[in-house]
Image (cartoon, rainbow, N blue to C red; front, side, top):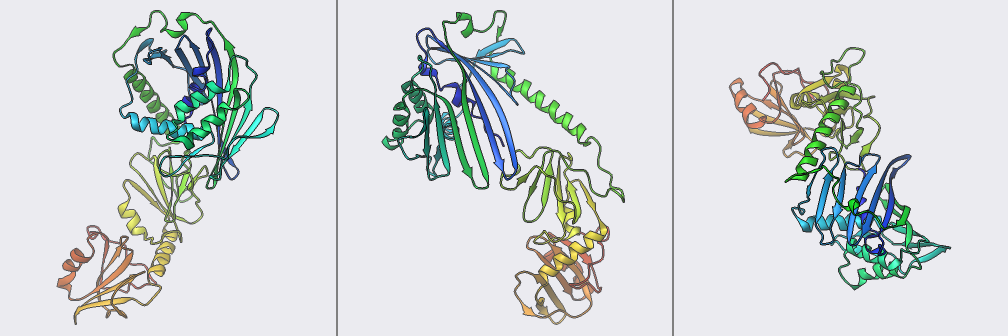
Length: 457
């Protein structure tokens, strides 16, 4: 997941404008590295400042300049939507407190800082140490650092840079204010910020570079909607609907390219579906692939590679076919193909010979010790194979009413008793699992018979 830090670059120079105005271009490069894999995103932000008014344009790898932000001297914000040739006032965030906390978090990352559990800034050792001519470094014990390279523009100064950092970071006490003071004490205005963060197995690098700075003056039209544009009551709705339609079109395109318009049909030579393009997520129990893993998997478990196929015994896909779960022999704490098949939302693809291996492995885990038995009377017995089970060591007599395989809790239970107790046992003890009618020779070393139609509860 790539971070969005454009608001940080947008205000780095707000207070630094000379009377004639200033135009600056900041380029932000965000790199996320895990092992040998690096994801890179570049965004560029252009801003004009004059007489207390501001114009902001943004573009980049995944961002198109379609919305221009105009800020008035009194703080009012107007959004100009270029594709629809319309403009309107931007509404205030619905929850200013949450919005402000998010801005503080992203700003802290761009300045090489982190927030502690209470939301306080984790400061580096101050003041900044000198690396060489024009380069300064601050490093903290929290796995974060900030390197600054100073510029030479005469109309920009460090005090203005520090003032704008204070607006973003909003120091909450004197200790946090020391970071702002350290920025103000620099000999000149920084032209490049390089923040590095070590986050577990991942490294996050944020480079914010001033690529252009020029003084004005600029025409007044720079800070106004273009002629012929119409005012609308809800400009944010206009932008939202266009972006929503674009996302739907992009999703439809990706579905077509991934072959998801039609259900996958397994064949003897191709029993498993092809990988989905969004990568995979591995857990202790299974691996899943998605057309888009955004919000479905944390960075520690995410991979750009597809799920391993070598020992997969079954695949379950959701109704939209954009999410697939892969179940492998030996990877589950409890794995019973009949359960996976029964609980699958839409389509299940299984490989019979591997399903048998998976069942054996699952039963071996549960039945690693002698079974525990519970007797209600001389003709009724429940035999449980589970990692933890209460009862008397030993098994029930031969002649089973049936077998129940459950996933929560992970156990296999066999039932003994008169035939008229079959329905009662199934209702009381196997309401959430799969029931296999007995009697029969099912034991820990052999799979149960396939469930008959209507037998599953």
